[in-house]
Image 1 (tube, protein in one colour):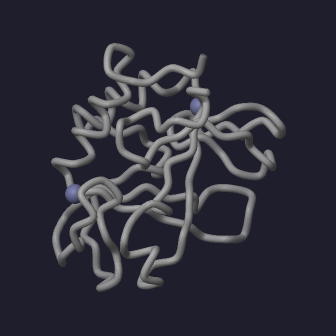
Image 2 (cartoon, helix red, strand yellow; image 1 turned 135 degrees about the vertical axis):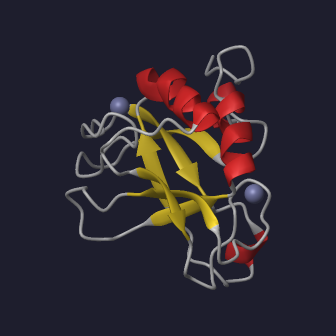
Image 3 (tube, protein in one colour; image 1 turned 90 degrees about the horizontal axis):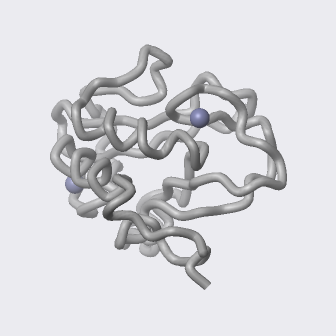
Length: 147
Ligand SMILES: [Zn+2]
Ligand SMILES: [Zn+2]
């Protein structure tokens, strides 16, 4: 069933049932709805996670926010809710979830949940170029649909 297939042709973006409403959408900042289908962005498929160099983590957005999120990523036109940022990565242990290359000490795209109601702080990183590629993959013409 296509529900289990990644939306993006990689394994970064997948439909998933939200288990809690304490996590919020990367785009609109409103809570995910418990027991409903949302979209999960994750690093769980990466070698860095499989080899235990990075913890497996995921962030969320609403299915209906997918188009706008894709546009933001393509144009680097990020909302002011600070969940998506152009930022200097100072951690030595972050890998791009899209190309899986190590994120060096440079300005790249950070996704985070620091304004969410859960206490577990989570962030994921993408190279600027890869964030645009991921954004393109979320366009309705390119994405896999849940059917
Ligand atoms: Zn949303
Ligand atoms: Zn990358």
